[in-house]
Image (cartoon, rainbow, N blue to C red; front, side, top):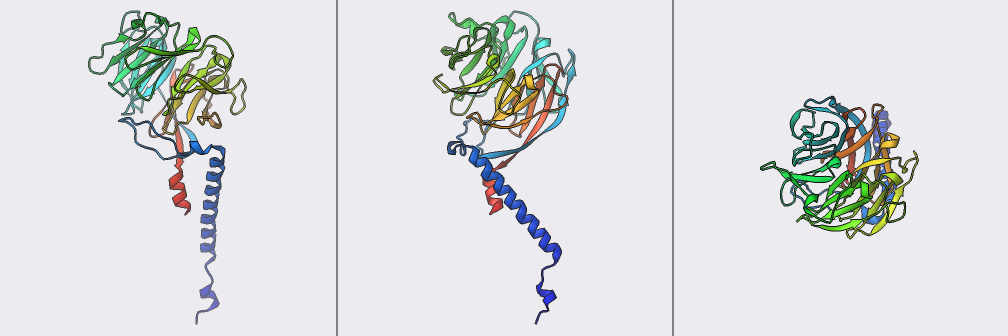
Length: 353
């Protein structure tokens, strides 16, 4: 017969087991709370089928931390002068619209210089204050550059690296200080025509098919828009900088909703500049006037915010498949790097069970 002492679980084991149970309860409550904030339609998102993408399961954002800073001010390789738009390719190379140096720079995720395009000028292949860039992987591997002060968009492929003008091939489309660009799910090109307070969609053949917006603060009006993003459903998100809003349109260009409004509370914006979407269609917005980045769901609910004491003027933003967030700081002339931490819901549920 066992003694009473033998039948009693050691106190250390009890504490350890209790801690594990408490951890599971906390994680379960976190998942339940988060799921209640999202419509059911957002819990399972279709993903864009691209060669560079793999299907992702729904995930929770549980934290975003500052990692490091890349580059510094100057005209040399790996240096920047008013860096603006950013994008990332399949190999995690970072393309930066180095506006003050009138070029596009390419660096790796450690900040090492790889190559550059352009130089100051008005001829094809030259730039005057390029504000944004985009990569298209659909039909051909193309780099698009918003050549702002030349009032045009240029593009090249990576075979011959010869630039062509997109907008100048269309007689009835005259751009005025364009600042933003995005690529749609089927290779469409979307341009933010800032000076004309509108956005334009070009099909894969380079023909304009949609133009929306004019100056104002109404539902279908814009005031100095600066960037846009396109999700996997074809919805378009416009950064309406002058109105301190994000405006959402469907794939046909019809307005759906708007959120933000001037202020510094969570969910409000002050002079937002750029937007990026991750594989789960979370929206990352550089809230420049508030010196922070906010993360929203596709329906406009603010999930979280993050920043860094040295972040002065966040403008461009790009999110890698590994969760690295790159933010161009136009005043500090560098690139701030953050890491987003996620928990996939299916993994969390398996762990809890």
